Length: 465
Ligand code: BG6
Image (cartoon, rainbow, N blue to C red; front, top):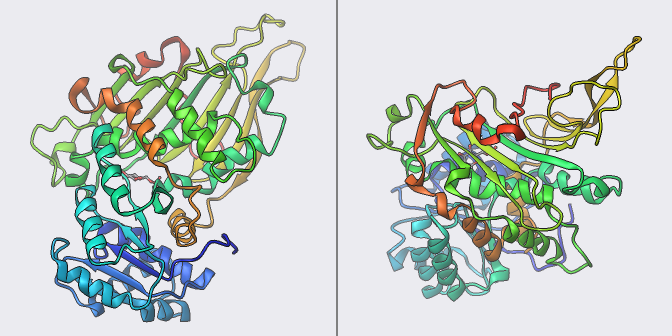
């Protein structure tokens, strides 16, 4: 795979090497990068766990085995041979002196901070003091900051040590094929553009549903909640892909510029346009505070203040312990200006549906006549494309891109700021949190939120709309 002609990074250092993200995503991605793309640089894990290299290698083996790789193959052995480990406290300069040593002659290292954001600034400054940040790239995980203010402060800290073009802020939804496919379908075809606006679109709905709970992430989740965890980032990125204007010209930043303009045009969320929910049983999750009012469900009504979308209601919702694990966006079209056939048809007429996961589908919904003597019809879908799922996992795509300095699939400082601006007014307890039963579609208030612009389109497993 050819990614770019930029100078490739010649060492990959990842902080948080013994953590959950490394286990679930980073080792499998590194394994695939070695196997499929010949990644041959030193890979240095850093963590404070009192481990040695052999323990890290065992962890890598368990991770790759569990996530579908073959640990007996040459590629896995190759990955192990590239692996190094530095253990210690991120406040300790000796840790970074050791890291500098392990980096050897690396001239364009990439540092990946797979650690809680509160540690970003200490690690960034230690990297600088030890000389490890010289000519380096920096990848940071989401959530970037805790709110708009802290994200701005974090950016200012990182800017002291790294140039913006060397900072790669991860939102792994951008690495997903089906999210890229939304943009591709819109801008590689001219037929959709004429009706992709307020004149034809009645509403937009985006649902990111998960049928599992907070699992073993109680402590993290209880400090985060659904709005910060996925609404501020993954869901707004899907929204931007669906609604942004086409990029102009060939400038490298054209795509991100358009995305930034769109997000800047989204009105800051009004507490009256938000419903928060918490599934029954959430308080029993280890790590969750007694009496916590953190939301595991959020539904919001958004508005975009530009000519293309003025007046079009946009509903986004996400939740844990919902009936299914499906992410999907539906752009619903208006009814024809008059009912030629006298039918009583509720809501919209036709839609375009993008299923992002687990299966990947793009479908066009229309009404067609039911055979017979009456002029009445039915809603059917023309499936434009259906695939079982994505092939290149997002972390492989994103880490590979960052190693080559390709930043298009990462968020930018102004984009992150625009995302925080949208949700900033509704963070925390600005609105009440309502209980919902696991396996349901969330609190009742969500139905009132959509009102006559609804109903919600609940995604059904493959095949259904
Ligand atoms: C992560 C969130 O960013 O995205 C998780 O922290 C969420 O809470 C996950 O489950 C969803 O990602 P995916 O790729 O499984 O849809």
